[in-house]
Image (cartoon, rainbow, N blue to C red; front, side, top):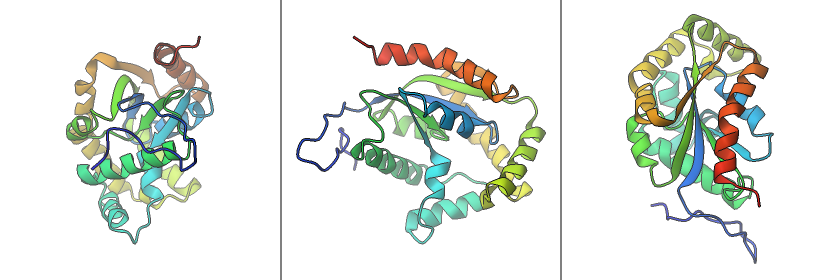
Length: 219
């Protein structure tokens, strides 16, 4: 079970951490839409901290029980079970807080790849307060599939190497993940992922900065 308060760094005078739920923004869209790229850019800007479920999953020990489960589902283009996904994510989030890489009293949490189902949205209610959902709109999914295959080669990502698995991931997205947009419909803002990276970043910041200022006011 997870406590209602995050763990802190193991020192004599740990920094006080705010209680859950943490204000956050979701970066959302089909595979290959550029969510991770923008998340990595944004996390270099003071006030933002990006966490990608895909990155977390790829760092798991494949010999561990959780790593094996994730690897098996990923190899089939399927989502890992909700309970396993949430457990991994929350453990990782706690570690980032404890190491003070993520500072909840100063940074807006940017989540990429989670939640991926309505059930996950419900499970995360007590831990995250979703202030904004950036929906990276894709009008050409075939172009995204080509992008993913190129990424597999450039980044040596075995999870992207199979076109049939990639197409299955798109099917799973439309069936299981797309309904999350309806769940958070009041805070959805659309971003055209076909634009150049600078334009996508500019549009993201247009929506993110007011959220940042509202939740982390400067004196």
